[in-house]
Length: 169
Image (cartoon, rainbow, N blue to C red; front, side):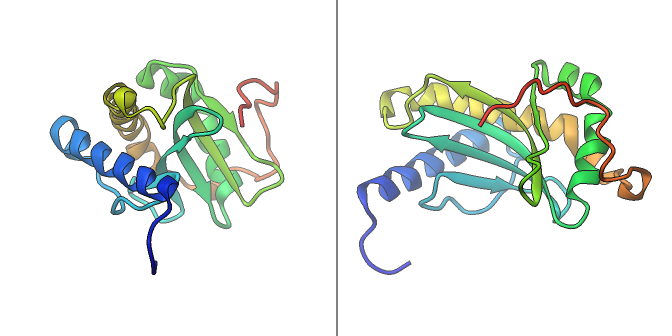
């Protein structure tokens, strides 16, 4: 990335760099990509076709943690995880947004903290603690399940829970 970073990109880089400091102290097992000047940061959860991500939106004023299923088996992996929805949500301690993203090549499971402003650096400690705690909860609830996925066990068109709940963009 050549040249000077814009004010938004500088803010994003600082935001993720400070989150890494919190993660190192509170949840040192959570590992991801280097902090970058973008609205998201990726974290490893044991497979290349499924990832853990944190994002922030300075315009819509939210922060979010997601497990993203991508690749050829995205839909099947998502459905296998969704079959464990009650157990996963109990372990995470919250209801989650199970979004199959039908018009995309990925699906995701997210938790969102709305009405927070990533532009407000005085609120970053609370935002970062929430993100760190959610990343840790997602890692604990999803890591082993993701390792055990066998996407050939489900038809990608099989949609056992299509009540339309939990869809948040």
